[in-house]
Image (cartoon, rainbow, N blue to C red; front, side):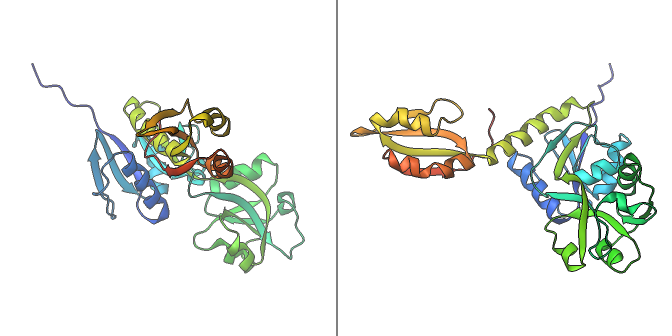
Length: 286
């Protein structure tokens, strides 16, 4: 009998540079994947039956659309541009921005409808053409690289479709937003036909859920447990432990939403809670 051919590895693209790359690698590392071999320059790393490779996000999205990748870490705008928005995806909660239509603040325009017959510059021609076509607005879409704000400010284009993070660059170039197209963030996008990615998706979700919670340890008076449950119910009933040599106090461990903890610190103090310690867990499976 001939030896069975091992199944091909699932290939996952990671951004090759920038803040998005660093944040994605941090998620993977926290999820238990070895990423030390990913050091730039198109590096590759095989771990836990997966193969991670560094790619430009636009190239990765094109390869994912063509079925040459099993998954990729991308931003929403790139996902929309390359037609893979219908694939399963997990929002990662970082690299947030808004995709907007903007024009000069002295041109008298107040909405996207005022751009009929105008030239719109963008890095995202497919998204831009679909947006204006859906609204029935006839524009000429021009694909450009570099700083789009400067192109619009110089009058080379009447408007732009671009990402806004802080809005500082728009204000510097005296541009204003006419319409918001889409809120964007980093995503993990995967093929439906790759069940081998189920474990990766589970680990990523566990890491992201952990970031939104805190593991809290504290001491409370033995008679204050009911009040504690009212203040911080946690994901389930809290763990209650005796303290050596103390009948008046007990130790309590529980998991709570991070924002909820900060808003209820005063209430915890009011019931006599002491020794409050809050830690960010690495993973959380609810």
